[in-house]
Length: 391
Image (tube, rainbow, N blue to C red; front, top):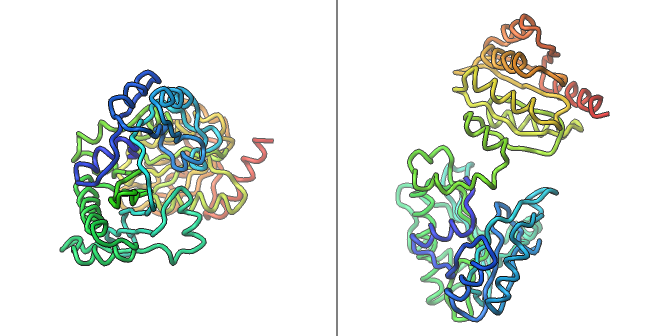
C-alpha cells in the first residue's frame, strides 16, 4: 500500500526521524492559512500523488509569501500531473502539502528495503540524492552503498556510525544519522513496510539532518495487523479496476496494452508479461491469481479483463499444482463467459494438475478458446490475435 508523503512523514516522525513542519490541504484558501500557521519565510507546496519525480513535472513549487502559497496550491489542485512514473494520463492532484522550506547544503539518499537475495532488510544510501538518483546510480552503481541488517541483533550503533561516515558525515550529523537509521529500521519492522525511502535526506545549512521527501510502501498482506494504517489507503488515487481486484483478493496492476493477462503465481505472471513484450505484444494488465483462489474469484477476475474496452485478446497461463488446480480456473472462466459473453479471442495454456480437465470443461461449456501447449506458443498466438483485433 502506497502512502502519500504527508502520511509517511507523520509516521516516520513517530520513530524519531526529523521532518519539516507541514500541513496537508485541499483548497487554496486552506493553503494560505496553513502557511500562516506554520510560520517561516518561505514554503514548499507539494502535489500529493502516488508517483515520484514530482519536482521535475512542476509538482513542487516554492513560495515566499502566504499569498504565493495559495497561488501555487490553486495551480496544482484539480490538475493532472504527468511524471515519468504516472504514464501519459497523469494523476489528479486532490491534495497538496504545504511545508516550511529548508535550506540544504547537501542532499543524501537513504532507504530501507528487503534484499530478496539475502532475505534480509538492507539500508542503501548514496552521498548525493535528488530526483535523478535512478539515472545516476544506473550510470555509476558503485556509488550506491549498502548495509545489511542482522535480523537477530538489529542495527548495531557502531556499524551504523561507520555507514554514516562513508556518506561523508561527521560530528553531530553523524550521530544524528545513526539515530535516523535506527528509527527507519524500527519503523520498517513495526509498520511491516516493504520500502521506506528518504530522498533527499538534507544536511541543512545549520549542520542538522531532516527528511525533505519520504516514500513509504506498506505490505498489504500485513495490514490485518494494522487496522490503524489500513485506513490511510487513498482509494481515490487508485485505479478503479485495481481497487475492485483487491476486493476479489487478486493481485492486479493496470497496464496500457491490449492483451488481457491472467496467470497464477507472481513469478509466472511477470515472466508472461515479459515474454509478451519480447514477442511484440502489449499487456493490458498484470493479474496474479492467488493459490487459494476460488472459482468465483477467478470468475470475478476474468470479468475485469472482459470489462476493459482496450483488451483485444486474452491470455490465460495456468500451471496447476498445490492448492489451485487448472479445472478451478476453467470453471471460473466459463462462469464469467456465460454471464458476460466473450467478445475477444481467448488463448489458454493449462499445464500441471488437471490441465486436460480444464480443456474439457471449457469445450463442454461452449467457450470459444484456442489451446496452446507451451508459454511461447501461447504468447505468439495471443499477440497475433490482438494484432488482428486491433486492426
